[in-house]
Length: 266
Image (tube, rainbow, N blue to C red):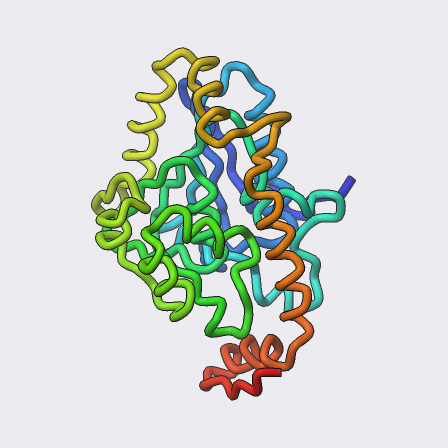
């Protein structure tokens, strides 16, 4: 079993049938590393098996970022992000970790790349007015590898999603709300409060009926969403090929060196 080196990177607390999972790395814009994947994944598994828990809320510490996605500094140090044996749960032990308990993203700041993919993984999204949503991977020579590419196209109008996906440009919380990607937009500092209010509305209902309704909505059986199986497999194949390209190395290098990348298409 993989081990956690710093359990403080994720905070877990329960309030009236609601568990709050907080990515607690504000100095790193709540980026996801190996520990975060283990801790969040464990927290979701525990909540899923606890009959007293009816809703899961995912948020980030501080007021700057929900999550910057995968920890690029850890990757550049050669560290593994996805724990051995937990790869199928994807980023943060969450993006492909199905639970029958409703999940709400309380987006307290910027959510780009993997941060957007975490929000897309949730059933409902509440965000502050200053939040931004986007998948900038194409600007780095990469693809959104944690479900973002196919979930964005399912959760937004086709051409709106393709513009975000192919340009890599971010979308404001107001625009995301207008297109139905966000349920509620709230003032700065109020994302968690709004998410908890929404969670309380859900938790007041019959828990087994709520969970059955979610499984039906997603066509989920045996603890998984099989409608996405082929798309996860396709993402993995495309990512594996792209990762070997010169462009995939040039993108992060140019970003680290604060310069424009020179694409070679090979």
